[in-house]
Length: 246
Image (cartoon, rainbow, N blue to C red):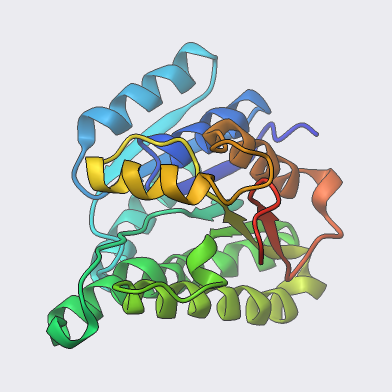
């Protein structure tokens, strides 16, 4: 299960699920590149945890919803590590707004961060994975990829699109030793604004396991998908949701 010598690029890598995935992969020997939109202190704190555990870490702050920014960050990551072997698309925004009040900017901003970013990052790194005949792409989708939610039309559209992208890339790169999978978390115990917390707790009432999931549980699944043990899992969306209805 060792990932020694591999390097992972993780969007939204400073906190919550992204942080735990970074620490899980680092514990298996991987170097990590941590991307965040603006919270450099959170990314630096996670990077310190990686280094304290003996790994190498790099922090890149930038908007993954912007193509040029992703290209610039990819160059910096490749200049430092030479290759990106694992890509985890975790960055997302989940604003809630009535559909009839939604502007063009509201719609496109969500699609840029939640869907287009995965296209930009995969385009930046998949070629190197194909050249080496080894790579892992993990996209974090969520219940929005399964259910449509009131007030979250662009989020649901983007996460459905991310699931479609996962299936397409799984077919395109599978023969080259590159797997692409999605993880669909249920309600996870993460830090966030009060309204998000209230939504999580309400959703957890409908989970057969009777609790919120932990970020470490999502990270454990991501770690398996990125390992040699996960090499025959490709083009799948795996629910990690305590038995919530899908």
